[in-house]
Length: 562
Image 1 (cartoon, rainbow, N blue to C red):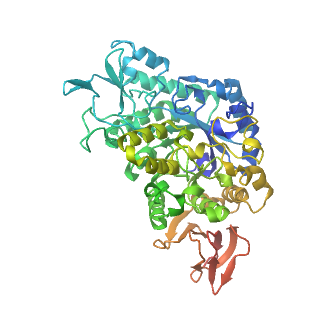
Image 2 (image 1 turned 180 degrees about the vertical axis):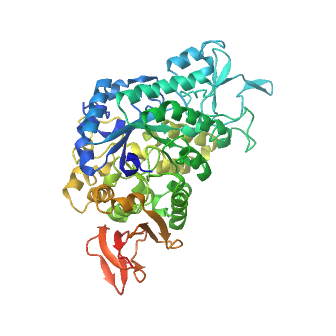
Image 3 (image 1 turned 90 degrees about the horizontal axis):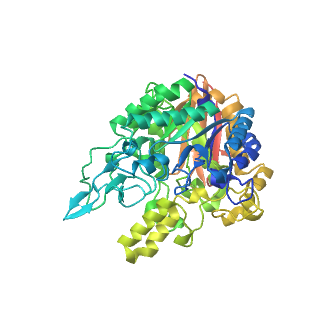
């Protein structure tokens, strides 16, 4: 089985921060159109664009007010059509976010739903009467929200609570209602008829709900994933979507299942015979360090052995039954070079991380700015946060632990969802070349040193390294090997070196990356080195049948046949 999306290289655009074409401080659709030649030059041929639907922007567009309109700040539907046509002219496919779990509380369905108990739209959402506790009305259950606090919001109009596992302004849709399913299928058809190539499906694992009984996992409000994640009917709903929407359009679909989905659950979603999704993002490999336990990045330690274990587990289990995306981050996670790299070896560690991830079996998804090694933002004060999840959770933690305000801020400053959302750094001009006006959010102060214009001008830059990886994957004689070859991890217990081999027919390739800030050696005794096809440093050091690796060095070489 071979599909076009298996041989593609994806790139995620967080539209609000990508490029501002009309100079109002906000990224827009025309900004994407203006940068299509740049993306084509980099070599990507699949774009995932975050939501640009009409929205009050409580959660930067994931709170949809109207699925059939473009948010005014991003442009018009004609702007979208122009961007899509220009992308297709360059051989670039386009997918967009499909937000299934919830809408904005300003969506017309919800405005109707909250009017009365017998409104025709009442069952489009999940409503429950209050629970009487100690003689007082309280939430129907003790379930917590991903954004902090309760998963229920009281509405005076009908004296009931609606469920919202994210923001208060993002009420959950009731997928048990066939009218909801049919309505969302019509939304999907509308966009596919416009010519898009598929969807990244947001929060797809949360479409079912357990019976409304309290969680026993703790006291007070409890974030219990088992109450609304990966429940059986999710798969029934996705099979229906596949049959009525995805399959008729031959649409590419990639679901966000996050850390809630086990390997076995992921197989249900996206094995070749699942009849649900093309593939799913998982985040098992995204937190193999001690970021949750430290207050300063100088104390960061990467669990290299653990990282190898989890990546190998997914590679092995999907070897013949399905396909994987390859990604280091998205709009919700820290910048990878700050997360897994080393600031003292910024370019070397950025190249190494790209090498070990994107020479694997699967479809790469590069996050905007990753190709130039953009870093986390140096937050100095909680007033600098923008993300609703970060702000809500931060204030909840402060409320519960008022004497630990300094510690709590330092933790949130390291790992919040705002890090990947700073402005794309195009040049050393004001605001990083993103806009001629002050942007809606921060520009990382290191834009003078880290920007696209500088990196394109230097042949040894991170950007050129990414371009070489993409070229190897798409156009080289090793295209089939890199795309479809088997994956075998070597040196599984080595705490410094990340090494694996790819094999297909009579071709073999070895990928080597060092997580060490000291010199390391890799023994070539069992390999007959043929050709070095990718390297992060000039002048590879070979001595006594060993490669002497400098700090964070990486390389890929082919092996001569027996």
